[in-house]
Image (cartoon, rainbow, N blue to C red; front, side, top):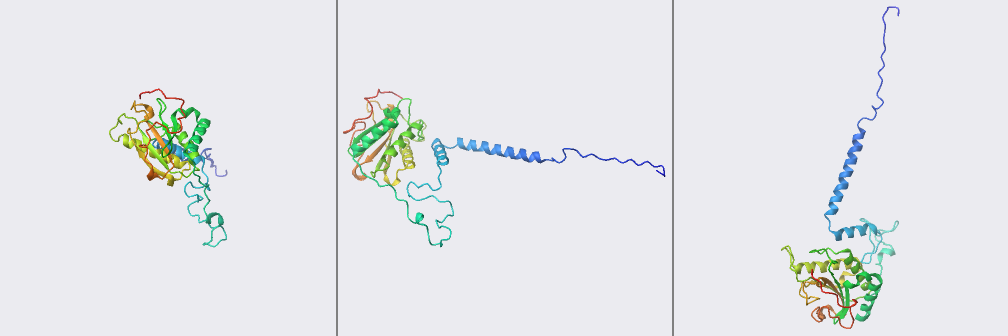
Length: 291
């Protein structure tokens, strides 16, 4: 240059990763939050009883927005729905929602017919469990008894949570008695072994198991209005009287009543385990086994 000064120009290069900033931290935080929610869900599931987990699983597998309700026969709606079609006046409802869906007609069948129906259904669908299902006729109707066997319980030990076998049997019972109008009595029984724990006794345990059976029947389409009574007898009505500790004394009895509930007194009218008119489906007496 004319004045002899030298000018040096330095250009600063920008880093190639400068644009990323801290965005990876946001993605990582989202990942950690999702994992925390996942493990929280797993922890909550472990706190829910087996019966409720089965009910939740069934709900999500078979959910239907327009599924008929068991008791009401109506149609399930989303919150806020009024049943009014677009363009209708607020007071007008569609024909589909103005009248309830009629339930299938109920019929009354004899005790012998019901016993034969149950036996046939058990032999076709649950033959591998038939040694734990006793079907007989009593003065008041048909009695279906679901019993324990040594190593094959119907409920978890000291609990009213039914096993998968009990669920299958009760579902089959509901399937066969759903279309009749007979009232239903449900009884819970235990063996004579004292309940370990001290907080409850065999009376509470037998009653809670009978109520658990009731809930399963209602879930499988039995009208709650047909339930005449749910009662627990503890060890006062033994099936195997010679051995109060026999596993078969732990059972649920479902009686399909032929008469009005107030006219029937069960199980006092017929000794437990002594069928009247119809034989048990078991091929002979089972060997007596202790707990």
